[in-house]
Length: 354
Image 1: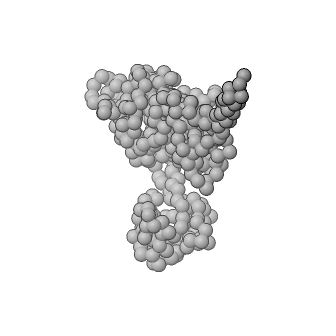
Image 2 (image 1 turned 180 degrees about the vertical axis):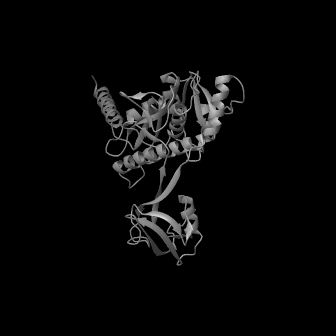
Image 3 (image 1 turned 90 degrees about the vertical axis):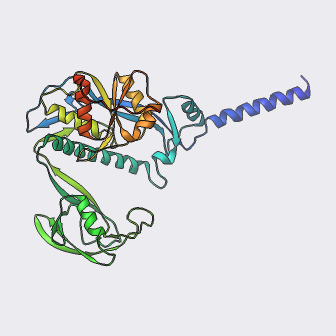
């Protein structure tokens, strides 16, 4: 072999080795894939996924599945370039920048804790939405979840305090608190009526201007508390989902609760899946990972997919064959669409084609 040929062989091998090494280098991306899907009318292990006590429940048929997205990668467990490239070529996988899932300066543990809390909150909201649709009485309490250090409420209000009034005006929900405080000018004093350890007291707190200079709180008065709502329902609802986080199963939880508490089978025996956040009033909101969730639903056997209106455009562009998209804005709208599907009468709103 000539010197020139030997040099080319060595150079080629060197380039090949560099390429192989680069392919297995960690990259700051996360691969999103279709995740597990569970039937809210079925069981998780041996126990019903949704358990209701304190009211008569009815047998159900069909499926009302919530769907999830599985992810691979993240800080401390990054995927390699080869995995990322393979994901980019797979139509069922989305490869996104790491900070999309794990914001900078936020630990993986913190993200997981937030996802768990969002799941808990979504179950509460879903139960409230079902009670609202069933016209069953629900009472709401506003509690202090946490107090921000260094802001006026620090040392004045405590986690667990129930806020019943502000400046003597009764409070029913978080919106009432934020509206009352936000209506003040920074520097003015707001008097909170709180229940603490079974006793009610008046707690004056002086407001300050919000440090947020770009959001909807910019320039407004704040006291530095994070609030949460606690509901008291006429029935007891327990939802078990295992190691699943996030708020996107809210709509399907609310439909599952409703179905169990009503004699009519709302699915008509069909395999229905769906997604969407939900408010206590039954408003359905958009979610992430719609493409992977539709694939998960179709792979599980779903033929109908309840789709938040704001996700319709992306859903239509990636709809799997054999899956019918039904557009939903509210829980009531979802129930009307399911009635139309079951009876063959009425309007079935569809995600518009591009």
